[in-house]
Length: 247
Image (tube, rainbow, N blue to C red):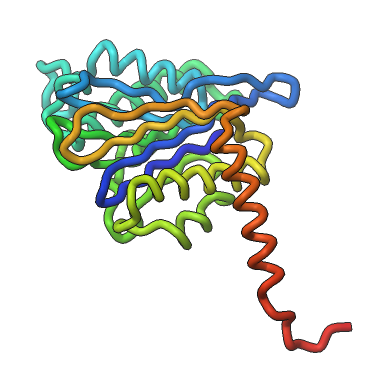
């Protein structure tokens, strides 16, 4: 299990992903789920993955080799040369669908999950960042202003934080904070999601992104979790007792 999110606000894009992989209670490892592609000054593309590790790796390898898009069998397409972020999402979708289909033919009827869901976000040529969710079948949806975030993986514990606190007009630094609170809340409720956290932050008009890995001993993240818990307890204590008849 994993938890990845993309937050798309007016001031830019934030992508966050945990790094825990779980193949059983005695096989827990750390694996990077947020990859960053492109060339500073020209394009920045972030891809976060949730699901089968083997399918993810197969899809990434196909992206590196290039794919043929439907209706264009003579051209090999790469995310490094795609003209728009929508075309990037299409290329990623084809690579994922082909990888899933190839693996599905080998596992036959075995009870093995091979599905992968991806978040694809970034900017080309300094354009405003865009964010897409790519489904296992290869189709995708785009993030919009009304709900300025997309999630994959173990999203139910962190979703209420985003619903209550995040809007399209939220500042970029505040969006990072809200995303980390959402991640912290998820980790508290699900041991299958864990540190370190990989993060990408990208502003419109800039083709250079800030990337950072938040480790277990990160002082800001530790303080954030402690302050959030304290604030919740204080808010709960400040709410009057319910007026209903209690035993």
